[in-house]
Length: 208
Image (tube, rainbow, N blue to C red; front, side, top):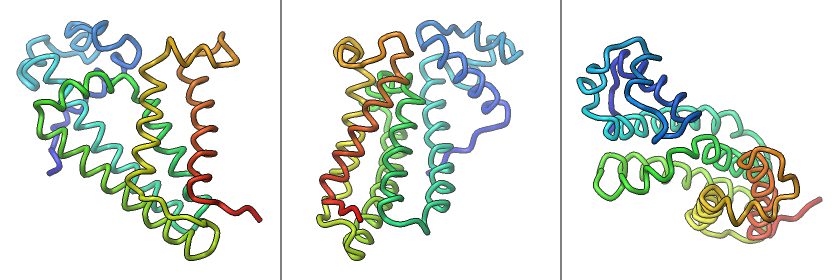
């Protein structure tokens, strides 16, 4: 069920997200957030209970916004060829994972005891899987794809690969050609290129 947020909550969450993206969860204090949001420190407790609980709210808010943006994204590519749609789907999910990379460690811990997060993620994953399945079937029907791997398996491969790269900088950066660049941008570019090759190989994509 979609959670409704008040305008004040949204304002605080937007501010918190920008700060956490720049300074990390541990490096962002309640005082930082309240100062930037022009509110009293006590308002954080009033609206969210604690900094940790605020992150749960923030994640739910971000998932809802991502679902809304995905609906618009999916509508925008629906008339494209299956191979174009698949490429855009892979690029979309990879870019979202890297863009909001600062959530992943927190979410892994919170999912153990937060049913709302599980439900929100499940709903989003099944929506995304349904879209992948639709594109695969259209590609097979049109002859552009030879094979029809399970949509949930394709999504698992994309998610798993992206999260591995995000969480294992010490390993993956050894294989990046441009060490001086920002790790996440460089890693995303390399990982996405390889992921597209892997996904289209699994589909048995036939070029013209």
